Image (cartoon, rainbow, N blue to C red; front, side, top):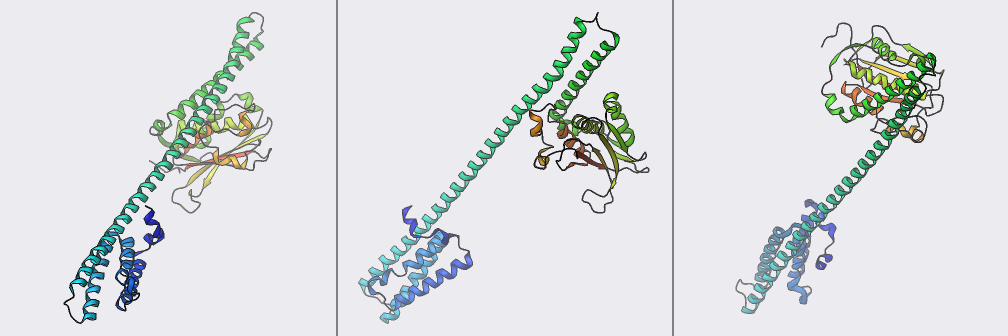
Length: 386
């Protein structure tokens, strides 16, 4: 391939409308020099230049056309110069040998140009395969990291409520005759809360694993927002709710189209995070109201925006884009006291989008200003039916 270094690689990439005039100009220039016999020692080889250029630009077909044109031009020039079509024997021999040489030159260069294209194509495919392999390797590495993080999170999350549950059961078993009714009820309440945390964790893990199957079984119906929020609040320990200032800003007749169990799970996960991260005796506001179409412009389909706002530590701006990913936890929570599997918000996103909605978070990241998790669902008026 060292021979190909004489030809600049950029020439083979010239467009047809540039390459063709270049070949024609080269042919005419060499033909004029050939006709004037300049320079005489190289006179017979001048036309090899446009043939080589045509072969390099247009491969074998260009070489054949250029060689044919060159042979025809030699015949015309020699016949005019001699004043007859009958040439001397020696000149005929030189002409035949030169014509074969020009044709061979064009075919060889055209073949090498084709071989170079094949080599470049193979190298490009090899590079693409290498890139695909690198991407696949990176994806596998990320998958392994996610799996390891999932195992660490689940191990930590299971261990904590299990330890709490086991501890209170041991106390009840070892000191059941020495405990008064109040203390026994307290221990049982703590054990029950440990069971609830375990159940929520297991449900989130199962929902994340079976999310694709669950999306296909949604039962869309008209749901009253205020009634669903009230139902979900009743699932929490009343004493926990009493330690916060919970405000509701929801019209009684506000309704959405959605799946009942999915909407309740989204609300439960968002409220659970609010109770988990917000300091006690701070406000938690649950609001809902109509908004325009998802693109912010007028739309025939109205949407209801449901928000859960707390006064917790907030979320750093650089971590917001990652927040709804699977097994994602904030850096401050990985080694902190707040537990979590990193699945709650991911499941919320899957469920909300399956109900034709959108979920996001608004937070400045400043402690005390908290976060506001919002999601939208298609609105349902009183006379809507599906």
